[in-house]
Length: 211
Image (tube, rainbow, N blue to C red; front, side):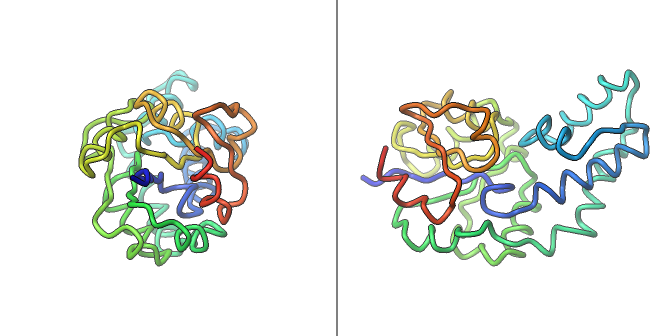
């Protein structure tokens, strides 16, 4: 049986994270939070937005308003959500992968669907999209990945997660799954028997068969 492929969305399927990080930083700066774009990207990559707000509040020593997360979402909606582009090499990779596949992300369900639709990727995944908000559990907890596997009738050890964040890797390993780590986080997370690095998305099919 070919393994189930579980894809993260932001930073893996679509190139949303630079724009989303910029929106986060713009809104946070309204409340006195001043950091570089690279600092914010490294610290908050892959995290639930409400958790990010809490971390910023703790760092500043004062609470952010309840409107903070909606402000970030609104800015993203007005600037990046409807102009997504797929990750370079992704279409080539998907065309070479006969495996069953799905999406499992910490983002809200409608946001995932909007971004996939904007990038022209909906047909690749259909309704096989799982949001942490629907499950009530966010990475690095493994429950989201476990739910995706169960819903597709795959044992955890027959799943490969494609991620771009350290917390996503942690969630996948906790779920007993193998992981392909794509992008910048390959500099901070070591390769192992269960974790493989990927810098060119078009090479994903040959990496999948190496597990």
